[in-house]
Structures are given as C-alpha cells and as structure tokens.
Image (cartoon, rainbow, N blue to C red; front, side, top):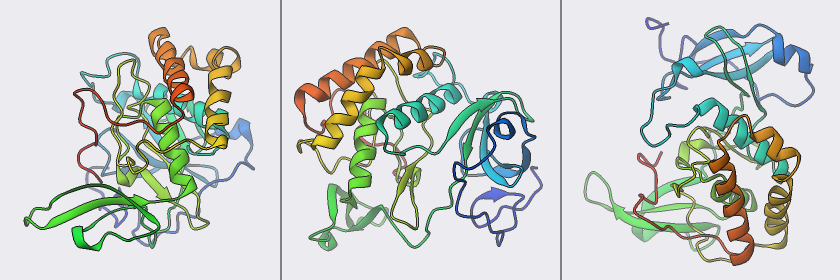
Length: 282
C-alpha cells in the first residue's frame, strides 16, 4: 500500500471521491462482524500507529492490528487495542454512545481492534482556534489563549453542548491522555463521537484534553447517574468484562476516579506535572 495515492481524507488507496456512507448502525449480523473477512481498502495516513479502513460485507470499519502499534514508554502495560475496547465498554455502561461500536477480533494483519467507521460532517466544527478578539459570547467555551506560528494572539475554544460535556466526563473517567480536536467526530444529526482511545485507563493521572471549558462546573444529575452506574458495574459485569483488558491496578484507579468525581460533583481541573493538553491540538 505504500505506493497508493493519498486521498483528501487521508486514507491511502481510497478514491478521494468515494462515498464511505454515514457510518454503521447496530442492525448487522454479529456473527459476520466477528468472523467475516475484513477487506482492507487503505491505510489511514494521519494515524501514528497502523490504522486501516476496511469493510466487513457492506459495513465500513476501522481496523487497528496490535502488530502495528508502536511501543510507548508511558503505556507499557497491555496494548492499545485492549484500551480501545475497554473505552467502548465504559461508554456503553454510561449509556451515552460516546464511542462507536468496538471489538477485538482476528484480521488480515492479526488480532486487533475493529470499530464502526463514522463519517463526520465536514461543515461542523466542535473545537477551533480563533483570534483572541473573536471568541463567541455564547455557544462556546474558552480553554486558553496563546500565539500561533505568526505570533498572532489566538484562543482555543470548543462548543458548549451536552454531547461534548458527556464526552468530557467520559474522558475524565477513562483518564484519556489524547483527546485532540480531530478525535471528536461531529455527526450530521448533532451527535458527537469520540475516537482513538488507545491512551486511556493509565493508573497514574494522564488526562490530556482540549475539552477543559467546564473546569469547576457542577456535574448535572444525568452525568452523576452515569458515573454512579459505571462505579457500581465495576463490581459486577463491567469489571468482569474489563479484567482481560486492563491490569488490576488500572481497574482500581478507574474505580477511584469515579468515586472522586462522585464526591466532588464537579468537572476536574488539570493537576500534576503532565501537560494539560495533547500536542498537536488537532
């Protein structure tokens, strides 16, 4: 695939004008998803690890083989594919559909993570850099100010929506170390999916995100109920499902993060020596 052209969407070997569809829904044969052939269409060129666009029957999927992962000094335990699946399981327990359907299975390049492809709305932006003087008065949250490559004063902002609030809560629970702007997919119907969750669930504090706009704000009743559901489920079915994917120390840290948020009842603030935002931001 190294000689294939790179399409406008950053997928090597895929026609730039190809219609990838709006993304898969849940009305698909589970047996086919688990054992049907994954036909690779191209490699997603912007990804740092081996990431491929493929299809199972008529359903487009993202396939990340474990063999294509690059070792990371600060995530030495397990592999990134397991963390991606763990993120989906926590998302499902919250009931907010933050993470597209994700599962482990064998594929053309060995075992890896498979996830429903979602085609975002290119006309929508959920995170943006704007001139410092042009921060909208409503509908957006201000994160921080800085300067661009041309020494212009700019501000990082993100939309102020219930969907992104839920994603920020999910990230705090999952200890997401890599919530870049491009890891948020704005769907045409207003839903927002979060993707690329390989850097999650570390036992130490690693939260790096562009979604800091609600620091200190009170969590609402639905957000607290979601966190409580995850904490309770960790002692039963969710804990059993996560046990093969995460270490005991990581599971204990996940429970502790839930308990901390339930006590404080507020969005967390950055802490520790870790950078508060990922780089690059997008």
